[in-house]
Length: 161
Image (cartoon, rainbow, N blue to C red; front, side):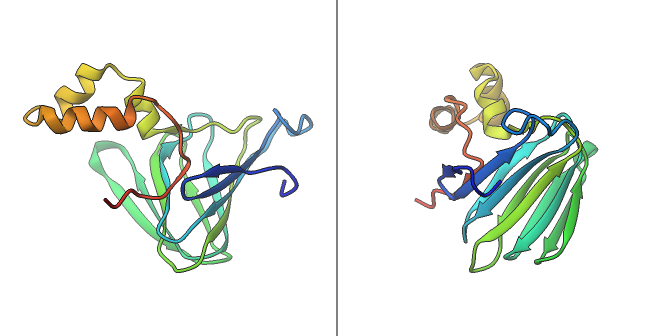
């Protein structure tokens, strides 16, 4: 897994191993993720399997959103394992001063995730702006410019401007 070239992101890097690049892998998929200090693994969900997260190094905070407005936040250190149920939105924050190294493991033949920004960018503009910026169309247009490309940035360094 570590021999493959990682996808470089604005806040880290990601390597994915599943049946697409390791054909014998019919029952397990995984992502090796590095999250730099100050960065987050963007808000996303996995439509095909529960996620088992294994934290190798660094300090992480994971927030999981369930139905009916419920959410839970957990802190992790090296050696910890977390579970995120299928289809529950979640993100991972680096709360330390060194990189997080983690594995996301799935009982599936293919790694799949869908980011919140990707979902918004693929939704009709009117629906997104009317729901989120009903009384502020100017900032709605600014927001739309950021999400409309539906570009994934799995590990994001927040723009603090």
